[in-house]
Length: 481
Image (cartoon, rainbow, N blue to C red):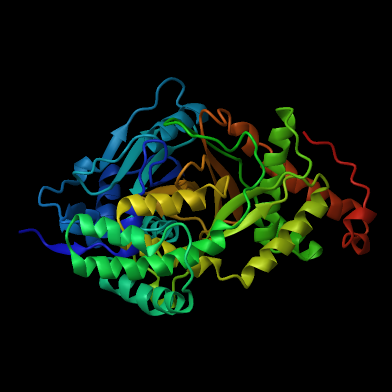
């Protein structure tokens, strides 16, 4: 009998969240200068990634409970592959290849991850990664992947990483998130405790019926707070997604420049980047001839809830906050300050632990109830937006210098857009994954990212600094490229 370990409630929710039009896969691309040594890459994966038992295990269901089980037929060749780009092997071909992978389910009979090494005409190899979200969140996966890298092309990866003790996740969930929140919230909405009692009655399990009834009343109260949130503005970004995706990424911009401009304007790097993303989305809508006045696009933004001792462990330990991007504001300075104000308001919000609590609770519930709750939450947003700070020095993997790391997070329900911002080696990049039916040309959005930041840079260089605190006092004479 293979070794078995129960999957945590939160990770169970992610495992069951797959849909044909939105697969729960974290997709990443690492662009290198030069070629990777394939044998060294294999050794780095074996020494680092595979030190986590999770990457050698498959997810299985037994009597309604989900487990990790050791894959007795595990073979690295099933997960690390050489692939060939068609045609010119340039950026468009690589983007289409990544989009096709993002639209293709992982093999459920094997551990839920893959790496594809491809040769490109972009100055070096590319390594494409797919990992199911039930294994780990973006913060954890960026840490695992980058931990395989070295500070010099001549070094080999260090000691294996520590292995996760899965039970700690549910202990964390119960002690710090679910128990205090469920005790404090006793109201009820559409998804009542009767739903759980009725379902469990069908399988004749009175003990589970009582447990699900308690869960149902607690989760209903928590969802109520988010359920009354109004829908954001209808735009072409929002609709019923199909099964085909498109991906694109911007050219890197200088992180020190972003920090310098933000310091003058009294804004954080995060404020600057989110505002630039809002400006890029606005410019695309304007190009399409769509109305933009007063448009608000809500993005679900992951918030890391890991404690210091949780670093280097897998699993999902993040919540979500709902950020309204002020796409309807034309003045870039006014848009930046509106973004800053909204981010400040969210800092005291309980939304992040609330959504983690919901994910854990629905992971305990029947799948149809999970789908109903998460569809309700997803209907309130247009995009998922992540901002992950990476290392600020160059890293090497299998003898090649990592030039640009990129990644995209999955979108749940009918959300059709994922925005990612990643900083690395004193540069920052903007990545976008979209549904082909809704936005077939995401490159036309990402190419606007740098120009939106340049507008703020021009203001700092041209306007007296004492006037920059009031957007209305500044004559913005910038032409969108």
